[in-house]
Length: 60
Image 1 (cartoon, rainbow, N blue to C red):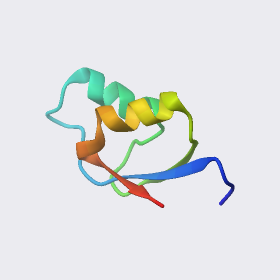
Image 2 (image 1 turned 30 degrees about the vertical axis):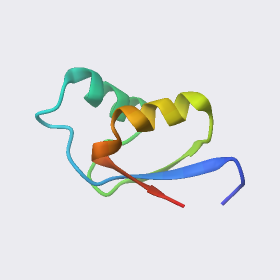
Image 3 (image 1 turned 120 degrees about the vertical axis):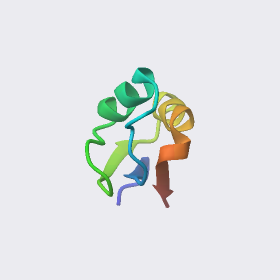
């Protein structure tokens, strides 16, 4: 894994959560449970992670 990237895994469904939270998950590319994506480690990405942190797992 390149430095400057962060791996994120969706561990809880967005169903039943606010529309904005589901939109954030979609924007990050997380569409299914247990899907892992690698995103650039930027302040914008960190903000998205913070908004839906209760649904995610950050893989170091």
